Image (cartoon, rainbow, N blue to C red):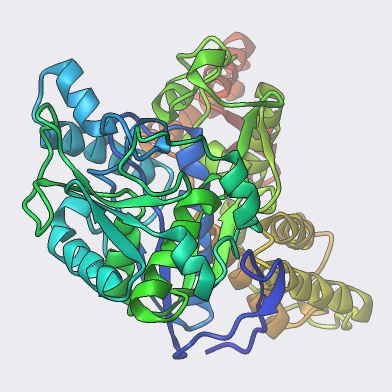
Length: 498
């Protein structure tokens, strides 16, 4: 394992802490996955890409990561509430399908989008409906501990009772008195004792098509419960990292902490990490605002707010060029800049993969260049080790690319920095870009064959001075984001950075 000291911002403490796994070299990581009743959108992409890179970097350092990302396929009610219709059941009713048909369809589409973003599958991807038994058993234990109550076939977590022994609100910073004041008066219209209580199990009414037997009623588990039950099953009662979007901090993650603490007498995760939101031209994304963009619409360019299609790797680069805890504003200008940056990175990757060390006699070591390269390498790790700040790391990789291009263009001799540093520089650039950041070249099928054919045609047209055809070939390649370069040793190509 490489010796790298990582600092992680822990939402639970509100500060950066040294990352010290509970059982090194093993790391348990849980991420709240999607509720699969619709296509994945921009808000789904950010946590998926963020925690994919976190997992990749930890593995690069030598940690053995068990990464669990769930699929919510029951219990998530409309408006994230304890009353109303299940989001998946509602979709099934509207489309006259079985709920699991809806689940399978949108899970498959989510996986397709994640693959296009080069987000690796998690170690385990449990579904809520596959863990009803574990959730029922957890409810029983919470009831036995005295932190829940049964009411007309439903079971609710008793927040006020829990708060007498353990503070409720430690993650979000909310105070119980303020929450009580903010919750609506029940006036006998609910089975809850207090408005702040939340459902562990809901009795299904006659119209509710998703239901399971339990000691209390035929019903379904509360939305918050699934993550507590599944994280404990696959990562243990206490694990290292729990991740998700900032919108899940309250009530979802707050409820998870309370449930798990009531059941297991310990906070489930040591570090709570939350990525910030993506806004659209400065506004929160929402269907009512007309700025709700799915990933498929983004990749195809089929949305009124989009000036063009933007590739999956452009989107991945766009997400990573900002630190995950900062707000990321989505705009055509931002995506165009990301596309330019991504292509520049891919051109660098192309150069680095083909660059070899060629010793030159009589070349003295350039101490200034050596120190600069070593400093850049340190800054690459400094970025990742400072709460996985990919923005700093990407900027440092571009600085490293400048040195690689100096050697490639003949303006710096590889012998001036030595073979060891040369290899370290080139290999680190390739590894960080491809293996850690997960940025890869996007080439359609037959790209290489088509490109080589057009380069051959280009050379022949130049030889016979058919400049009209030369311009035509250049224009056609530019349409697919490729530019040709006339070099001393022949014709080369690169991705168009404009």
